[in-house]
Length: 183
Ligand code: SF4
Image 1: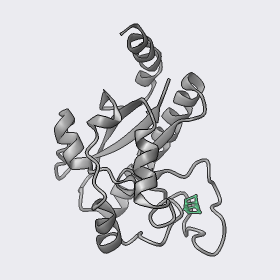
Image 2 (image 1 turned 90 degrees about the vertical axis):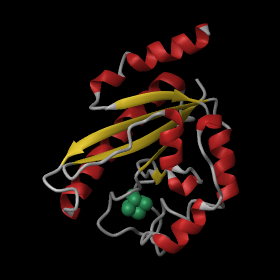
Image 3 (image 1 turned 180 degrees about the vertical axis):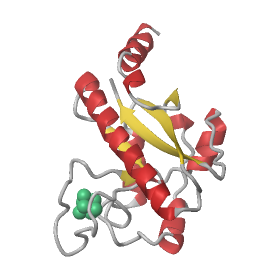
Image 4 (image 1 turned 45 degrees about the vertical axis):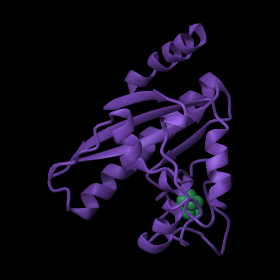
């Protein structure tokens, strides 16, 4: 219990520096995994096979799930963006990119606090206008964030299980990230 209180205190000393809406302290057992998520990536996502941060480049689903399960703790957080119209693609992409930047900054704070073995999953990498995949190496391997789904995690089911607000409106969008660490 003392250890848990310690790492929570450490996180709460910096997390309020960021525009985080909600956060939750979880373990890998709280996440809803399914290897069927990869089928959805393959059949329903336009980024499948087009980015180093997405399947199949991220590796087999079993390995991704195993890596997630290898950590002791998971920090789930969300940011909320106000947009003039949630169907406006460019406004949503700009908001998503801000969430990615916040996630990278928070990921780096976790590394400072808990060591380099920290895994951040978020909404997917869009750092480059055109991804170098598959012809050249990733241009920013340490800033590349894979999607939560790429690691076999069912985000809506996980959010519902832990009580995270998932609802978007016509003027707000919610983005989630997971930070895995062992402390
Ligand atoms: S940093 Fe660039 S090259 Fe690397 S995964 Fe992201 S978009 Fe692709």
